[in-house]
Amino acid sequence: MQEVTASQARLNLIRSLESDIVNLENSQRGFVITGDDSYLEPYARAQVSFTRDVGRLSTQGATARQLGSLDLLNTEVRAWATGAATQEITARRRSLAGAAALVAEGLGRRQLAQARELLGLMAENENQRLAAALDQSRRTLRAVQWGTPAGVLLCAALLLWASRRSARTVSRGVQDFTRGAGELAAGNYGRPLARTGVRELDVLGGQFGRMAQAVQQRERALAEAGEALRESNVNLSRSNRELERFAYVASHDLQEPLRTIGSYTELLARRYGGQLDARADQYIAFTISATQRLKNLIQDLLAFSRVRSAKPVSAPVDLAELSAQIVADLGTKVAETGAVIEVGPLPTVQGNAELLRHMVLNLLTNALKFRAPGRTPHVTVGARREAGRWVVSVSDNGIGIEAQYFGRIFGVFERLHANDAYEGSGIGLAVTRSAAEHHGGEVWVDSVPGEGSIFSFSLPDAPAGAAPLGDLPHESY
Image 1 (cartoon, one colour):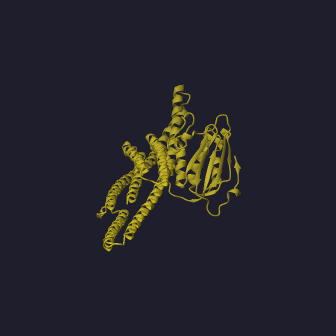
Image 2: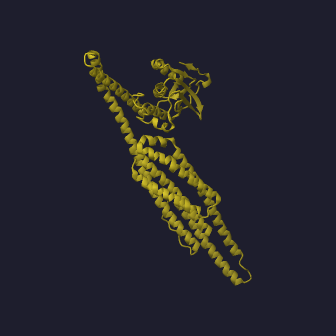
Image 3: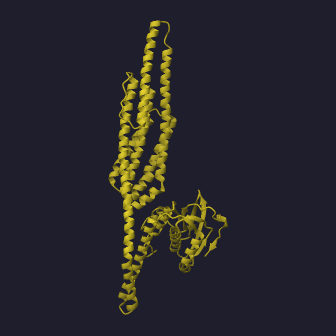
């Protein structure tokens, strides 16, 4: 019976660890979503509780296998807390977009999933130990019954009567435990276990009742936290939709007055250029330049809003033909920079042609824009099959990007350079990311500063009947 009690205590600690991990994840996610520091208080308490429960379980007679799993669990959760969780919290203090980008990478989710899997294995192993302990208890009782001396009939009768009564009592207690466990699994936590008169069973029954109350309290707290998280997600989704709508309406309504300002400023430059003093001509030039930058920003905002609100469209799109059209449209820029653009074999994919054009155009434009001084730009467009999907890559020999900015550059209005060094609104790569997600894919970058970058995005597989990649042409421009 002592082993049964110890096994139940270990199960309680395993369930407590499960609750600690849920509290850690919910409070950390709550801060990432809202930016409210009050979520970090339960996060800190959950860390203390997790450390305490790990220490208690390690001293409760766990097997070598369980101790190994416990060590792996502790390592996994600590790695999450000091790695992904801390990075997401730090990023959220700067911006929601940066934190969301880290969350989307899925490192923290994978680490916690591994931790839950380890807890599941530990619970399964402990349940097996509990079943073995109960079976051993029954065998012991039967051995006592059959081992009673048969020399004295009265003693034998009394011992038989006592053993049968004890067996019935234990059996009823075990059956009560079994029914209680079934009701606990079904969510009924209010049923108390009747006292049996057997000290060990009554102690176990008391622990069982306390465990049921603890599980009920934790489930209630988890349900409340889940409801709060769902409400926050709904509010966040609504806010995102309202912001996207505002960006579209605001940028759309700004175009007409901006065109008027630009037209009249250019008219002033043509009609009065050279007739005023040099400072006036400079002011007019500044106004024309600022108007053009604002026009580009509004157009990029409109493009971002259209991508975010685009309806699902799936049709065969020939990426080779699409890339050739884009390279032709960039002919003036290619000639100015002396760039060499090589378009390798590209497949036909399922997708939205307009969004795919945005993606390829943005990546090619950036490859030409961020070229290295004194080096002829060399840009390559290619594709490969990977895990049942197409991965399209645009590589260049430009200035490159430091690894710490790989996630940041795909956020809205994220720029790594001053506008006088490289023009742009900081929206192009955000449009590319949204377009890739619209297709159920993703976009990422690999880069070495001073050597160049490789931007890649994934797309659905080609439609039936499309030409194999090896049969497609290779073009240079």
